[in-house]
Image 1 (cartoon, rainbow, N blue to C red):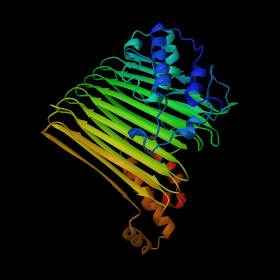
Image 2: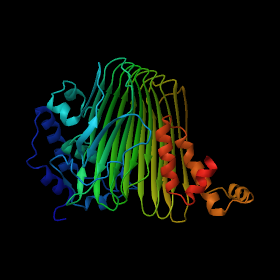
Image 3: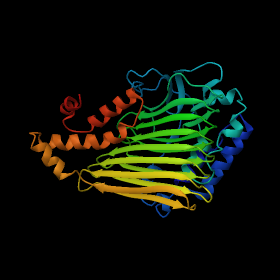
Image 4: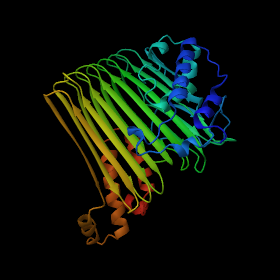
Amino acid sequence: MSLDPVQHYLSEYAGKANAANWLAQQQEQAIGLLRSKGFPTRRMEDWKYTDVQPLLKQSFRFLGKPTASADVDKTLGQIQDLDCYRLIFVNGRFVSGNLPAGTGVSVHSLQQALSANNPLLPSHLNRYTAPGKNPFSDLNTAFMQDGCVMILADKVILDKPLNLVYLSGHQDAPVASCPRNLLLLGKQAQAIVIETYAGADQLDYFTNSVTEICLEQGASLEHYKLQQEGSLACHIGNLQVEQKRDSRLVSHSISLGGKLVRNDIEVRLTEPGAHTVLNGLYMAANSQHVDNHTRIDHLCPHTSSNQTYRGVLSGRARGVFNGKVIVHKDAQKTSAHQSNANLLLSNDAEIDTKPELQIFADDVKCSHGATVGQLDENMLYYLRTRAIPEDLARSLLTFAFAGDVISRIALEPVRRLLQQRVLGQLPDADTIREFIG
């Protein structure tokens, strides 16, 4: 790479045209912040355990046109037996899909929404992602190519799940994509949204996604992120959520692929009655690196959150979990609980876990904790006394450990898919299927 990382992306950005003046201003601000601050290093606390230099050494390029003819397996993002609306993006660009329609329902690709001059975009796009806080989010803002804009009016219930499929496939050079999603749910609106990220194996590419969500009073969103990138891929994801009175968010973050993965989730509970559930599962093998950072801000009284993350690491894989819950001043009657459990299947696997709880109010119910360990020898012994071979016994216990998070998934086709994906990473998968029926 002839240029340093910042100069490379400044060069990619040069001459970039924008149709909307307000968006051009946001993108100029973002590229300016990237120019002045640069990319994170391990000297920064939030990036202490994740070295992004291998990512920055690659000369990733942004494709300028949709790639409908790209050589990519579009079945990668399918979820069997799931009746849903499905939007397919290839190398960062919208190529096809069936869009929901109806009174109070607006679902379009980002480029379509920009072309139509949707009046809500200037006041919401990039509002929930703080400029200058995360260099990769600034990079996304500067280069945002496409994505989904979903706007539901008050009391609208989306009749089927919306599956946003981001695929990366054949290209002449390592490609970067910057998906940008904006999900706005009006008062008492309801929806299920699935973000699926997948790509060709043994192919270098970089996915840098940002999803912004606003839930108005009484709105409810069940959100899934299924990260199944190729074995050489780098994936950086950022989810920003603002919740208002009596709103409900259930987030499932599943990381099964990628060579270098970082997921950031930040939720702000701004009005009483708001409730958040964060569930996460990460499985890494060989030399994979998976980093999950979450932050929940309880900003007012009578809000609640519950967070459960589990990790399974083998080979020379490394996992990172940092979960921060902040109960702000006067946020009385807050209920916040956080748990991170990790299973190490080899002597070389490593996990750095740091649950944090900061409380500035005095009438709260809060807890947090983390565990790191290997398979229970007593349980292994019990299974072996039942004539179950040791390797199979280990796989069964590993599947049960991961299944604690998978069982929390209400959408049955997604639950079955994840069960099969987890089984695919374990020995004796066919035999295990017999055990679980």
